[in-house]
Length: 95
Image (cartoon, rainbow, N blue to C red; front, side, top):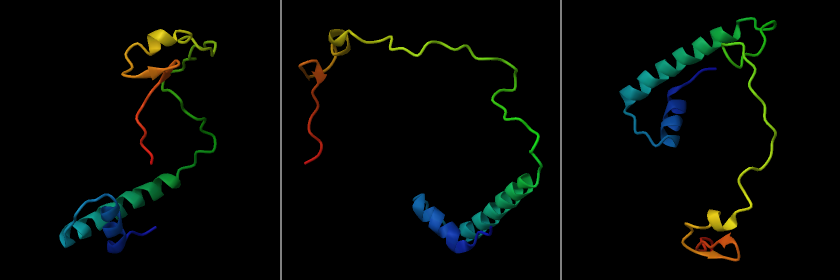
């Protein structure tokens, strides 16, 4: 993949960054350098490499998936500015 000056200008526009002509030329070269490095990484054979989730061989403890914080609506709503019938009352934001 190649990056040209128009692509850099488009990326800068989307990121709301103003770049001068010299900065666009510099960024074009830097993007090309990054993409060529990524292309080098794609050449590495990773067929027999297992997925890595941690650098240390550990098994994370599992726990039962259950709701542990609930059944106390008055405590949950204690700091609510407004509440009605056990629910938060918020101002309407869509007209």
